[in-house]
Image 1 (cartoon, protein in one colour):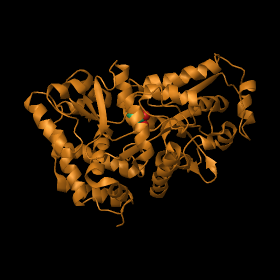
Image 2 (spheres, rainbow, N blue to C red):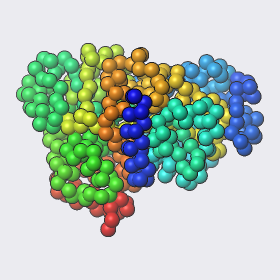
Image 3 (spheres, helix red, strand yellow):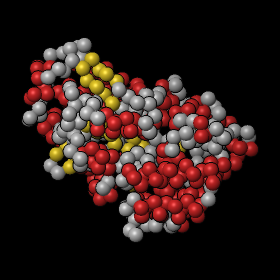
Image 4 (tube, rainbow, N blue to C red):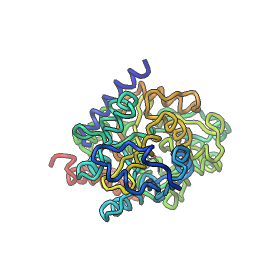
Length: 438
Ligand code: GAL
């Protein structure tokens, strides 16, 4: 039943996604090359170069769990971790582009399903098809059809999903809420009432980071969803609603108010440093994807005890979907070993080990829930029944040009706090990027 509901709901959201356009082993024994890849398989396979931006707490451990499983299968292959630090790929995406264009591709890289994979890498013909690997591993039945759809182009599949992250999550320090007699707030009104109370008690209500632009975009898309609901959210990113709409202005007003309740040093902090303020008891709330849970747990913070999580204000029954996938560049130097790595990524064991550390839930429909914490179990059930929408801040909802313009504009907005000017600028940027009609 869970599987059927899961398939139906994910098909719906990813149909939308499609619309918005979004040391040495014995490789000869271990490797089953794709047709046409025999030459590469015969080449040096003594190492494998993995590219990601997973260096923060939780992220790094998740990646290591995959590497450990790979190493157990291929003890003599040297894994080169070519990660570039910076949440949401702030720095990594530019480095990857340079490597890919400069003839120095990694063997496999992390990429969000949807627009980021398909527009940036598949359409220019820079990726290897993985369809034969899917068939060999029986993966077509193991991943939701809608998820396979957003890593596919034409008749070929180009990446293996490692997880499902949830974007719209309000994290809270359980002790600070209990000490101040506050129930986890489910609406924006309740959230701001809680902020008033915390501020009066001398507690910083919200941990925010804006050293990189994306955490503000991330927060803002949760507000768009909370203020306008899923249909509005989809239509807005599909270019059917103007950015001067009252609901956009309502979300901007809410963002402005949230900035007023945030730590004053947000411009100096990265996402994990902001989450760290909860661990240190220096702030009560944080809106962040569930990679924050990976960070909390790496810091020995226990879910349901030290911290809790609920859908961000106004978004109960809604789920902002973020999926990390791995693909193989066409000219990957050790492509056969990259395929061996992808076998780990797509395996039930790999997904369990990775997601237990990463904070996300497995992308495979058959992954058992029993080892996961109560927040993950709730998010598995929500994912199966909630209304799913794609993330803009994490590469799926809209073309990169507009996503970048949006985060640029918001980084101005959080200092000027001029709602009308920001709405006009966003509408102009949407037209400029071809997201809205002229
Ligand atoms: C997201 C990515 C997550 C996590 C986060 C912070 O874009 O999907 O896996 O890494 O960035 O770095």
